[in-house]
Length: 428
Image (tube, rainbow, N blue to C red; front, side):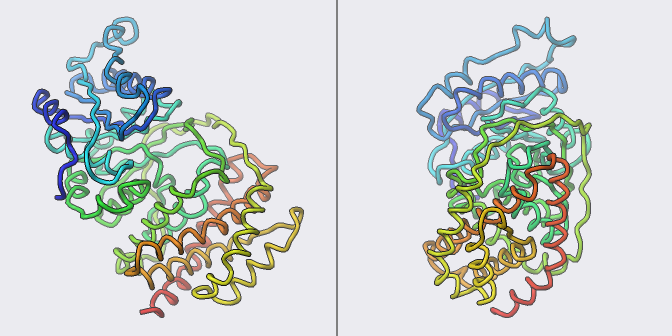
């Protein structure tokens, strides 16, 4: 295990609490607008669904300069439980906020502090929820912790109802690639809200990744991929509509995109022998009731996406020729010359490009961080182009029909997997 990220303040809290059965971890950074609601929802959920379990709520903060930590410390619903719940919690949840120390600033380091705390408190299960959620309700606690504590699952991935333009990195790359590679249909592998067993926590802490980009935005896909490849018993819990601080697809997603895709490609190198043997994807069990609550709409700027794509093609085509097939670069140029009314980025071309980039990453994986970042950054304008095409394809259809197109894209990733393997093996 790497060096601990727990502060002395946190160690004192652990010593005071002694032991718990459930730990709910909430990573945060400047979330004063939303974190009070998240903490209250978690407190209600623990009281209502796990009244006889000892529970702890831990806010792992990345150095907020607003009132995030103060709000966590003063938020409590337990004085109101008589009027809201029929049964009191036998063990009201202890709640504390702490900053983590050392490590790379980011969500992964916050998770590491939560996992270390869960181990020291000998928790049977851990729930992780984002601090920017506006749609979280007490039922989420049962839906994420229940499969771990009551059903024997090791890993619970969230399943949300999301607008067709929310989560475009997940929809166009992370979900279809993970499904094709590892053979599990997990719809939201980077969702941000998870349930994790004691067994998986120990496995995660034993891995030597906490000083890498995984400790930033790559942590969610890393956790999901490790769980699949280590044979964990996995389910998805339906949490309803996810309402959070949504970013328009063309806005500042650079750091997140880079770290998530870097982690995806890095894991492909690590688990090469596994994914090469996978020929088809199996469904994953779903826990909870699947409602039809409509998600909030997401605004998009189509012209901006297409303009960024066109500039990206012009600025990167010479670089792409160093690792992409010539025909692929020509196809990208042809698309960049089309007008808005005729703009079309075919799914098959997109899949082959993702596989080409994965192969290029495999080829230079031992190169400098700058070279790997250059490769992944050059994929961003292509992603903008494919996202623009998806928006055009789906602008006049509802979200549930757009989901069919995402599933079709997944099928295309699986269908073209032999192309990936052939190209991957050719660079050895």
